[in-house]
Length: 360
Image 1 (tube, rainbow, N blue to C red):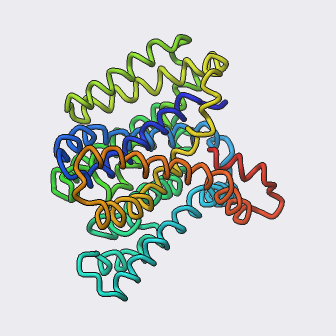
Image 2 (spheres, rainbow, N blue to C red):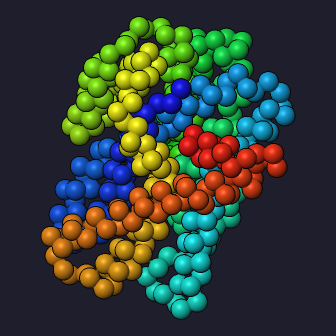
Image 3 (tube, rainbow, N blue to C red):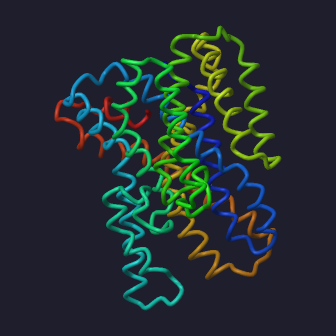
């Protein structure tokens, strides 16, 4: 089962997050634009929920022993790590160059100090006090953390079913709320954590796993896409209106459930979206690649070459790094990521298997 609507959601979320990061370079009106886009940041939680949904749907019956677990982790590493390491090393090289030339305004020391945590994939566990170097990749660290604990979700489902998973999720969220109240998260709340975002991601991942079970059991008979569209619209309205997570997150869960139920019941109903899939399925690559384009097009070219050209010029120019990010992501998804995945998977893995993996 291929969920085309979820791919579209992830693509739109990746583009909006990219736009949020790029708009910080605007010469005027940046406060208004960033405030509006900041309200959409719960879309990051949607990423993790969809990840939990997909992983549970595809792997919960395929992990029966430690060897299965190792195969699972190897496959997920082949999916996530090549692009993460490539971009991390790019920014490490930039930091080394900034150090070599004595760049006074580039935080090369902070970036290089964060490099070991990025290489070990622990930078979303609180190993760094703030985002640095390859800053969006905290979500990769968080994903790996969730994957590492996925067997616990499998055990909960096998021995306690959906009820046990829901109880465990509620208990984990309660722990996170308590930690937030005690000031353990630098952002003030687990719901906005990034340098400690692994714990936030695990909660989202568990919610996505629960959604997968609800959809698999078809606990509601939803066949029309209209309820899902209405719920999605409510999510967007709630975010843009400034409602906080206690309102946005339940609506997001409802939207996920209703949308997945409708597409599962009638897979052909979303066939019209198929021509968009070569672009929409590269959301992960866009999310990781866009900081490179931000550095090249905005930090180097815009700031040092075109600065002072005015807001109209900026928002025209703003489109260029977005297009470059999407094109580079499509190229990476087509060539670089399958090549690396094939090298990291067992020798018997064929290219088509690697290509299937990077589409997951």
